[in-house]
Image (cartoon, rainbow, N blue to C red; front, side, top):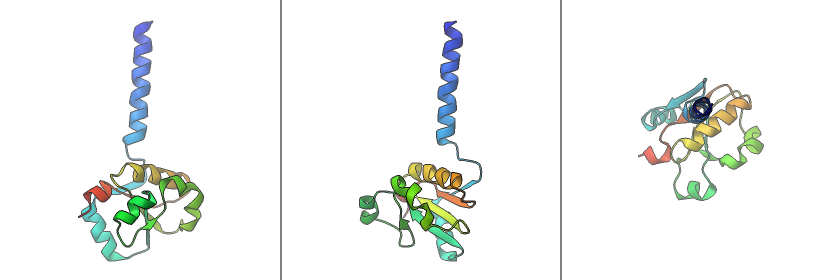
Length: 121
């Protein structure tokens, strides 16, 4: 009885971690080197930085608009669902969560910047 319970608990924890950290299907991931190429193309894209306003003021990439993660649900209408959304944060964790949120809200093309501003040079 105890062993079965332990297996269920371990399985639940593993599933939670898998859901939290594995990229969602349909979300593209790029590194900061690839981001530089995307920025130079200036195509049909919109760029959002989901860090806090204070983090954004401290250092940001000019093309990125600040929409903090905690405001994303109510401000998503500021973005076009017809354009790709490129999302960045400090390390890549919040932007991953934001990317999943945007996908659930019906955005078809979402790109997450792995490593975030910490990897930006």
